[in-house]
Image (cartoon, rainbow, N blue to C red; front, side):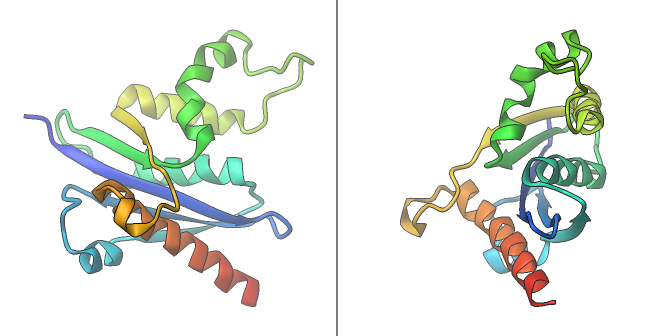
Amino acid sequence: MTDIIYLFTDGSVNPQLKVGYGAVLLTKDINQPKEVLKQQVKLKRFIDTSSTKLELENLLWALSLVKKEGNSTIVVYTDSQNILGLQERRLRLENNNYLTRGNKEVKNQDLYKEFYRKFDAYNIQIIKVRGHQPGRQKTQEESVFTLVDRASRKAIREEYKK
């Protein structure tokens, strides 16, 4: 039997300060009461970052928190277009040695490479979450995702106050 580890990840960044907060929630049971799930959300502050970089940094940090057991499947829920498109981009990035058409190094290539190593080492599924849906239209997964979305946005708002 395959265990499923649910991983919800989101981030918020202040582009002027280049500071962001990643929020992650790891659980094997998404049907726990929301208050219980909310207490399981972890935050991490990232510096010298951008929205694209933050989403990758945050996902890699989240994967480092996973205690993989047997042939567990890690189901990642994200609204990040960058993360969602990584598998499609992999062959092109690798074939071009992570160089752009102008023969410059692709930004964040070290993070992409680390992601692909983890993707190969773990059984990972990435699922797109529609963010910012009205409550009555949300699936259970979208409701849980809201917890990490709100946590990262709250953390970055607190950063503005400093």
